Length: 309
Ligand code: RIB
Image (tube, rainbow, N blue to C red; front, side, top):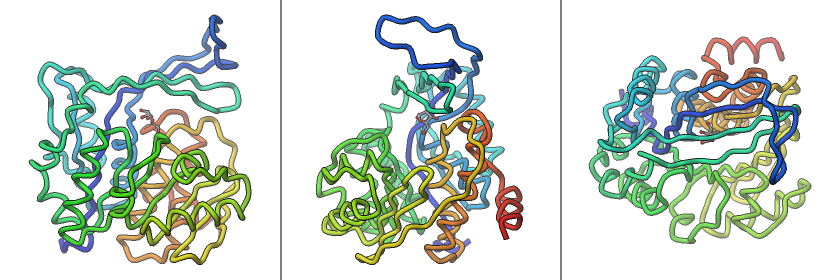
C-alpha cells in the first residue's frame, strides 16, 4: 500500500479499572459502587483501535508490560486490524493502569499509573522511526513522555508525514512541539491549557483557534462536547454539530473521534465530511460502556450515517 494510505499511532496502553457509582467520592468519602469492570484502554490504544475498526491501514508504536493482561491486549490489538510489530513488551514493568470512576451522569474521573508506557522513550521511538517515515500521518496524544512525542514529531516532519496531535490529558506545551503539528484536536479544557483562553462559546473557540494557528498549526479542531466541533482551517472557522444520542459513558469518545477522523482523512474525505464521520463514530461509542469495548466498527459507522440521512 502507498505511503499516502498508511497511519502510524504512537501512544499509551492501559488496563482500565472502571467503577460505576452514583456520584464521585468527595475527599474522605467512601461510595459503594454499582458495577466494576476491567476493560482495555489508554488513549493511544483507543485511538489505534478506533482507526483499525474504521478501516485504516495502521501500525501502533507503544509499550506493554510483561504481564498476562499485556499479552491479552496485544492479541486484541491484532484482532482490531492493527500492526503490533512496534508494540514493545517491557520486561519487569506492569502494563499501564487507569482507575476510572463513572458517575450517574456518565461523566468520568481518571487517575493513571504509567507502568510500561514510561518506557516509550526517544530511544524507543528511534527504534521504530521507519514506521513513522513510511506513514502518511502520525497520530499522538500526551500519555507518553513529552520528549518522545517531540522526537516522533521531528521524525515525521523530516519525512513529510502529517502530524496530528490530540493534546490529552490537558497540559501546556512548548512552541517547538506545536510548530511541528499539522492538525490539533483539543477539547475545551485542553484548548484553554494551551492558549489561556477559556472556551465557552463559538467566539472563544475562534480566538483559541487563532492562538493555535499563530503557533504554526494549519488545522485546529476544538471538540465542544454536545455542541460539536469548532473546525478552523488557516483562520476560517465553522462549528460542525454532532449527533444527539443517549450517552451511558463518555470514556474514549474523544479517542474514537480522533481515530475515526484521521481514518476518513486518509481516505480522502474533506475536513467537513471527516468530522461528520468522526462525530458518528463518537456518538456510537458514548452509547456503550468502557473504552475499547465501546469503539464501533466501520459497518456500524456507515449504517449510523445512512440512518441520519
Ligand atoms: O481517553 C480515555 C482513556 O483515558 C481511558 O481508556 C484511560 O485508559 C485513560 O487513558
